[in-house]
Amino acid sequence: MKLFVGLGNPGDKYRANRHNIGFMALDRIADRFSFGPWRKKFQGLVSEGSIDGERITLLKPETYMNESGRAVGEAQRFLKIPLSDVSVFHDELDLAPSKVKVKIGGGNAGHNGLRSISAHIENEYRRVRLGIGHPGSKDAVTYYVLNDFAKADREWLGPLLDAVADAAPHLAKGDDARFLSEVARLTLQDHEQETRKPERAPAAPARAPKASGPHPAGERASKRQSALADNLKKWLSARKSGDDNT
Image (cartoon, rainbow, N blue to C red; front, top):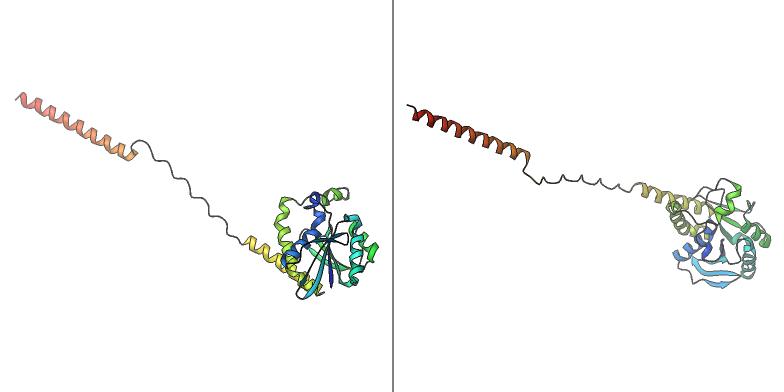
């Protein structure tokens, strides 16, 4: 049995926040591998299933980010899961958007969810760090993570979540390196497909509107014919006058 934990805040208000990318990752995994329905347990929402023969429990704590460890600790102790089989998916400010890294143990980089988990189950669990980028100023961090992803982020967010779900079998088997290489391959492949999309053919130039009057060439021909007719009339008239005087 493995425990996959996604970090975030419960409720519709936070659903699309950057801080909730851990919840989003678990939702995508649950959908991809047809896990069971979400149900309340361990102070959170739990869904159970299997990935390539590995039994997995998915947990989304409902204790709010700062108290995530309460839910994780309860689940880990009840299920008797060793720390090496606990993987926590969370947002990472120190990684560029769409980048993913995995590490076991280490510092929590000011992440309150990780700090709470470490306080309840110690520190040597796996962290799946999902890059969301940094706002550039420490003072802006809280506003940044507690606000929704921007429209421009949709270009990389969906493909990243798909790649994480598709590569999850490697994570379930503890092969972190293969998991990361597969995520990188899938996200790069998606990017290349986007850049290879054919551009739209330029719109055909609008046809010039048809003239309502006669065509210029027609006008010229008509004028020439009128002139010839006038000259012919003058010549006949002059000839007739000459005939009368003989």
